[in-house]
Image (tube, rainbow, N blue to C red; front, side):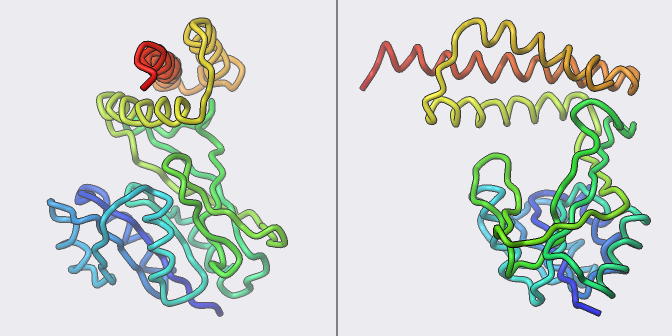
Length: 256
């Protein structure tokens, strides 16, 4: 049976980290937490749970998760976020893999909870993630946005039964706060990449986003939560394109 290192990155995750660690204890041979100097009780909880805690300044998600993998004692990595919990079904799948590791990496679905309700339609499910892997065959990218594990070309990938439970949206207010944070980063990245945004982009694209999420991908099946997510996703799309367009116009007026 292989030895498995579970790695988590944290910053002020006292509301989530205890639950996350508890789910990992039965399947991980070590748990490593990389903390970006939390100011709440995150560090205290980690030390109480007996995990290995390392403090490291946060630069971006990809680099922080890459650093976390490097600190792991074993080459086989299970990477989870503090607001994620390994479900019982996924635990059983991971135990089977530990006894007979066949592929270089494994994917599984992530099930997000929105204000306490599991979201099983739209763009949010199945949200397939590659989080269980041999770090000799893959590593985290260093992207500011859309961090992911990039495997070598010759790497083999399997898929596991069971969901990774994601508790990142306990309230609509928190959803909106995250939207503003991410759209600011996305619009800045789009501008720096030279994306040419026209006014019709932030008129047509938000409408299409709502239509695609709510109707084509079945978001309506998630009831009020699906409708709310579709509306906020549409709003997020509008903000992203509008902000990028504003940056373009500002540069045209002040090219230097």
